[in-house]
Length: 412
Image 1 (cartoon, one colour):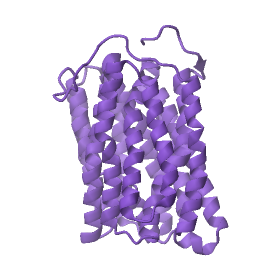
Image 2 (image 1 turned 120 degrees about the vertical axis):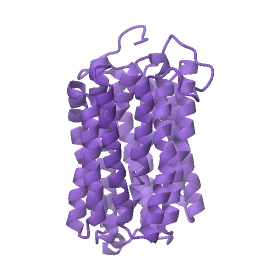
Image 3 (image 1 turned 90 degrees about the vertical axis):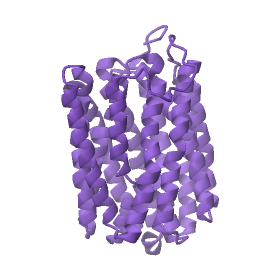
Image 4 (image 1 turned 30 degrees about the vertical axis):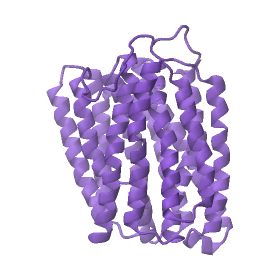
């Protein structure tokens, strides 16, 4: 895969894949808590409206869109992936502690913008590095392991956050105050720093030695038609996949306090962590398309359930199923991109385009959700998302049938 000598193996995984799993775990201990508490802090402590929160969350995710594309291409152009990934992690890890000083939503939006800049710099080079460091027959296992480890970090982070909030008293459990928010930011900023030495010391460069793309591929020419079609389908799905901030607001509306919400989030991430590797292995055996479609069906049913839920126990059950959706789609979709673009010298650009397709849809998705929440009712965003998930699932089914026999491993 473009290496001078083979990497060491750990439990059947390459050294790069194995090490990046721990990098993801440490980073997500920090990232997931900061991402999840910010909407609650804005709503509870600063009184920010749902439409503004939707705008901030959508802007944060869309910020990385062009950067994921550009830096994916740049990693192909420079034939360097490791240090681009390192730089992206460094940007995010420096930004997170500054959330301690947030006192207005524009400042919060700026810091989320900066944090997602780091995400945009690192994501595509890292995914391309992992794909190039994996055996083709184990791509699902490799990406599943990565998703399992980063969600495991989320579990630890959520449990730590719940413990800190519970120790602060019953009043803190009902609403997220500024003082509790600041303590949480300090706590979760520490582990992320440890991720940088791991990358520097143990991740090995593994970029392509062939190809030399000089311009961004705006026309998508040179890519398989199935890859282009998959990007369109991803856009359809993502337009209904609004920020998880709305799920948390829904949980609070159903009567859950802050501690219960964080314990529920830990449960959700625990389900995802436990099932990500089995889902990846399953996709290696029966095909990515089938696993992704099943995951989207789960998502459609879960979002429909969120639209109808009124009780706290219902939200708990739906969050558990939400973890099943994530396990079946997150890592598997990345493995499918690697399948559809087997050329190492184009994978950075391909992952950039895939991430861009998701990111460019994130802002309108969250803005639409915020408007539906305020103008119609809090159930409307979830019913809308459920409908688009069904549409995307049908479209992916059609793609599978049209392309049957062309590449069974990647598409069926």
